[in-house]
Amino acid sequence: MKAYALWERALLYDWCLCGGEYSLTAYTDSVTPMFLESYRAREPGSR
Image 1 (cartoon, rainbow, N blue to C red):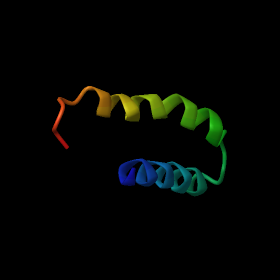
Image 2 (cartoon, rainbow, N blue to C red; image 1 turned 180 degrees about the vertical axis):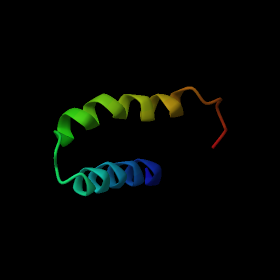
Image 3 (cartoon, rainbow, N blue to C red; image 1 turned 135 degrees about the vertical axis):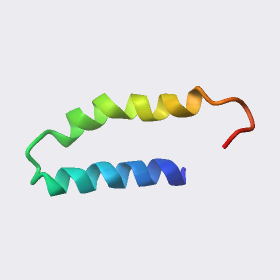
Image 4 (cartoon, one colour; image 1 turned 30 degrees about the horizontal axis):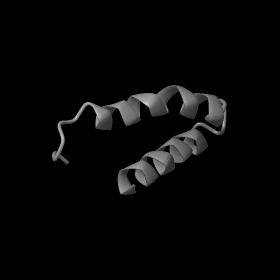
């Protein structure tokens, strides 16, 4: 859960640095599956 919270803050921070020039919702929808997939690909018991 901590890693996901960090991920969300990073997305929001980057969006703010760019002055809100792009849709935060659309960008989050496009990159979050890649983030979550990185956890699914791990072997059980690994961190």
